Length: 332
Ligand code: SER
Image (cartoon, protein in one colour):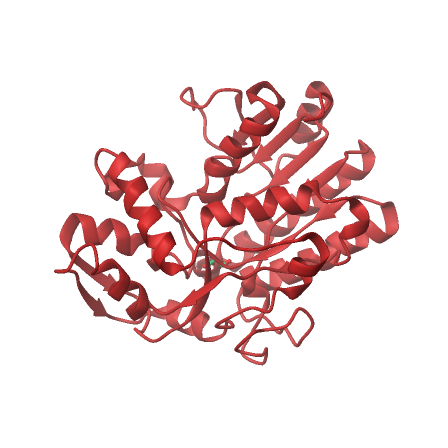
């Protein structure tokens, strides 16, 4: 680790933030990694401060005061929730990024990480093995904000030399935090409901294949791209990232190896339209070739790891989490 590295994580209580905070602290030490989110009173999280990412003045003040050298901006409104309030989603997703990019330029930060998403793609993108460069035409506000954000990242890199790095993350599966507001969330919720009720109502059709990744792989990808030498980062918008692809029926079959009585009822809702517009699998050869990305967890390994982690959580259900995290957690 570099002794001068001070990391600020914005959105540290979200699905990615929780695990990324732990992983970065293992590398840099807790005192070098400031966790922040918009929630007050997180006395359970060490080195935590409340920050609203839309409050640029305070953000700048914190960066100066603590000598922050890297920012990980994870706060965002996801695809399904974003459709309910397009203006709020655009404002949060874009304004936070521009604010962070300006601070990175003005305060000469070493690096910024900002996640993009498979949501940048749309119905005219290639469905299978979706390439890095292809038509995107996103149809959700979330996807539009991520696509526009990619161009902003590239712009600040080209024009001001801001070293901002980004990945088009697929659906992420993890046990440590519930998901909020996304289209791929079913792949997390099914585990909790299977354990609790042996019953799951799925809002996607059984055959809807989407790209997914176990969170541990996603965290490794983030750490790997952020520690790669600058010359290895050849894509300054955002890299495609893939790993596993499966449909709800595939995941249900895997979970039945652990919970044979699981019953799944398929009741597609508005999120089906979003899922239909996204690729089923990603060509992430750019990330693999440029900075050595390789995923480790296939679907079976992911499910096994999920059950292992959920066993460690005393009460493996969404009740386990504070209410605010279930409703509107701010992460990808
Ligand atoms: N997981 C996100 C969502 O479902 C996609 O990046 O909105």
